[in-house]
Image (cartoon, rainbow, N blue to C red; front, side, top):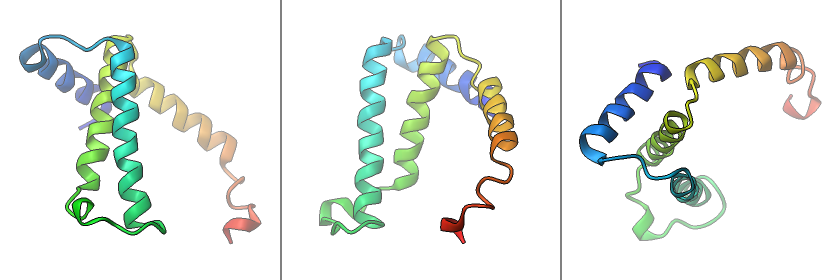
Length: 108
């Protein structure tokens, strides 16, 4: 599914099941919360912190999907065509960073 369709799916879900979008500030707070859950899994599973028993069943994919959902909500409610913005960002990064990372001695 492309980003444009994902935005439509989220919008339809909100209209069918969610009554309305939370306001932008609430969604920003939710996004922060969801990113924190991703950070907790990464820090404990892949970082140096030990993983608590209660964290072992956490699904990183599900938490990343939560982040995506809220990002799509924010894009929808602020009128952002995220597909267009993402495509432009990838084009910009490709032009700007074409040789940059290949020439980074720290990455060799």
